[in-house]
Image (cartoon, rainbow, N blue to C red; front, side):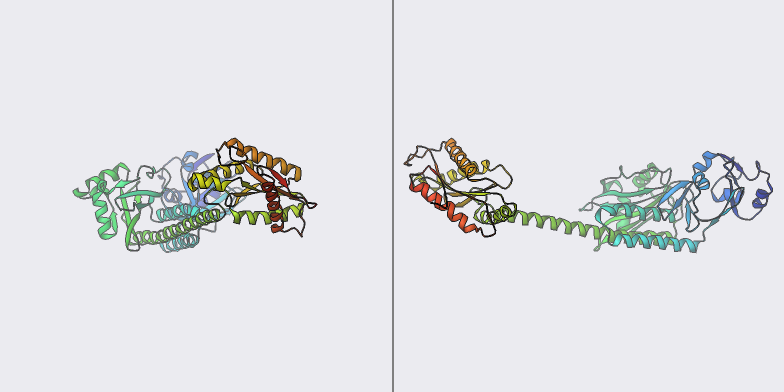
Length: 483
């Protein structure tokens, strides 16, 4: 892309006419991709009058669009086919608010750049801040940071600053951290370096901010000797001027918001002060709301966790840590309905530790409890399929629900139960059937229908268990309707 200042390289009558008008004008020739810029436009862009305009020059100038929160180079702006005529834009490098009017001719596009009056700039600031404020009212926690950065960008741009930021203090107020930052093009960020800064590192700054709520410095070089630490820090960051406003929540100082000028000194105005205060109040409210929402979310998560634990405890036997009778009853009802719906078999086992009373009487209840735990875990470990459930039914009795197992499969599973318990090799010298602990098992299997009842299934399995114990214990018995 070729560029020429004034009309040195383009003597056409159109440009001569335009160049004589008292407006900041740029003519962009689409056929040659050449831009002609008059002196008023060069002044508005902050370019030296005699500067030789090149593509690099215009690529280093940027225009900001508040509506999209994006910036493009002047070169891109001029060569684009889009029509940006409905909003006030900002020259990024000079922080000059402008409005642009475009006229398309057959030979070129004509751009008229007009500085925005102070009153119009106030209106634009109010509109942008009002929009950000409304978005922050009911924003989700994960979007707060982006909107805070938008507010800092707006504040920095309208205050003609190069850097704007939000600092928050630690709970004890002794440390400060830069939590959010906006920087202009070409300005170095310092957010990462400014974390957990102690009060003693900037005592003059902290004391002034706490005493008056404002720290305003038009010229860093004029700071008093008492602010030597502050002057050194500010100069290391390239700061020439800065303005900071304290932030309070429920009468407690929790941070501050501020702007830095790096390119040149800045005499802060009452308007700058009011704007920063306004943004500070908006961000204070947003942070308070976000903190409240996070607190509520945390409380809700804790409540869900407690409810989950309570629900788990309500379904777990406190001694054996497997399912309790309540969980068994609920699960059996659910599995009967499911089996009836899919027309699949359902099996139920009720088993009993043989001669457990004699074990307790001779070894004590504490040792008996340990045996119950061992047996419970052994039974639970055999229930590996989804839907299988081992539960403590009462005392030394256990119940096992086995979906989709028929009578023969159920009998085989009962054999595994007895084998698993035998392998524990728990000595039981007071048993009449074995020197080790054994189980008597009752089984019942059926294909449930809408008439099947839980208590009848339990009665059938319990009846089979009774028959196994009556026949001598350490046996498996299956209930049949023909018995």
